[in-house]
Amino acid sequence: MSTSNLPNISICESAQAITSMLADKVYRIFDCINKAGFDNSEWGLVEYVDTVNYFGSKEHENLNGKFVYIWAAPEDFEYQPELNAIAPDYILHTDDESEIRLYEID
Image (cartoon, rainbow, N blue to C red; front, side):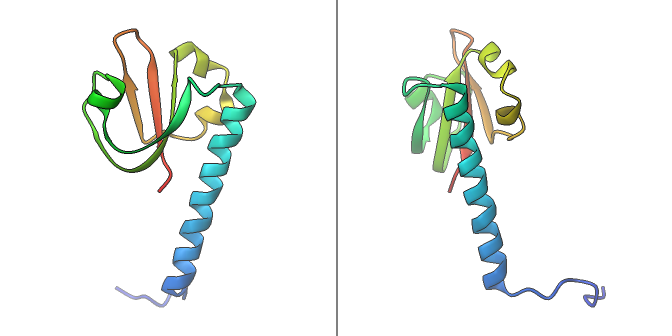
């Protein structure tokens, strides 16, 4: 396989690009939360949790890392095109039919 067509970037430049993309994602998530008017009972930050024990979700995931979550009724997400453009890393469900969308930020 020829590598002559691949861009010549250093590991440091790659790390900076990834950090920049992550910072942009985090900014967009917080901006969407603010614009949508979600309050502190509907969103938060978690790290290293078991979703069944922490959220009481139907799905069992061990979250390794830091996440922003938004906990709302599915219809609350319907009119959030900017937020819906950001793919969550996980979507969990609860017994009361709420959705918990999780976005990894670290």
